[in-house]
Length: 131
Image (cartoon, rainbow, N blue to C red; front, side):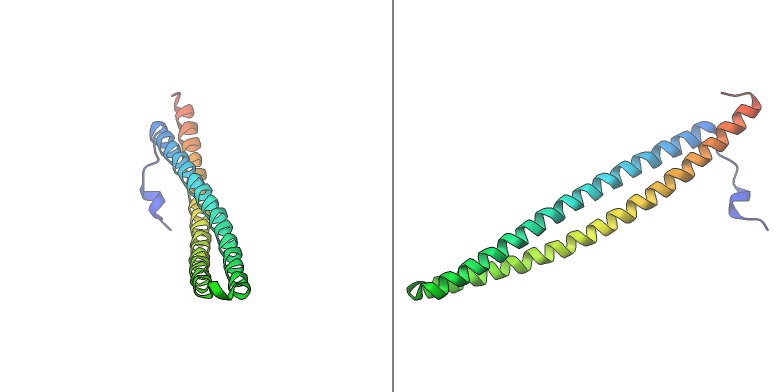
């Protein structure tokens, strides 16, 4: 059975090396993306916790200070809105991490394949007496 790979001429050593280098660069970019997504998740989680604390403090202020009830209610509503927004950012950041991990995995697979093609090309060149 003939496959698509059987029809394509094997890469030369320089071509395979360039393909491998490109795969390495792709892995590096994907890893940086994952690190950025992880940092965003940590920041979003901290913001969610801070917003929840602010919401609790605003509610306590409303209960304790009847004279400031209207402003405390507004602060509580604002803090709840910020907390909801922060939760949305957390969810989005988790999705970004999942996407980044997928990209890293795909890039690592491509790098391994490129390295294999480079090794094959180098072995073929060595058999022909090239360097």
